[in-house]
Amino acid sequence: MWQRGGQLPADGKFRELASLCEEGAAGDEYQVAEQIVVRCALDRVMACSSVDFDALWSQHGIDGESYDVARQWLDIGLTAQVG
Image (tube, rainbow, N blue to C red; front, side, top):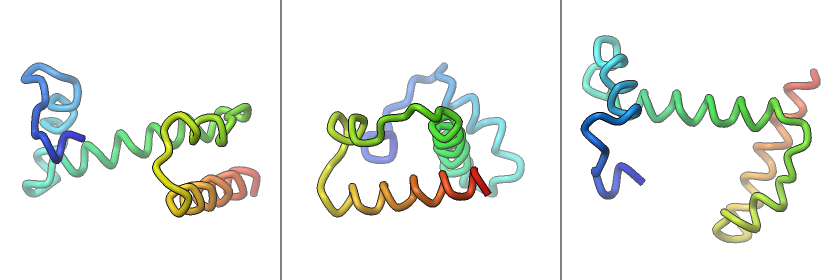
């Protein structure tokens, strides 16, 4: 993750997004940029009705407790999308 290593390409898109967030972020432009990226990624996943959550988890998941939390959030998102 970028927070641990702090190694972002100088001309990368994430830095570009963070610079766009500078004015309203009060020094937290990288956190704001990260929130935007996460939200966009979640929106993208939620828009795809054929997402196989279990297959994605088997490739990228960490542990059982994290699975339970992620699955609950996915279910909440799917419920909110329908309602």
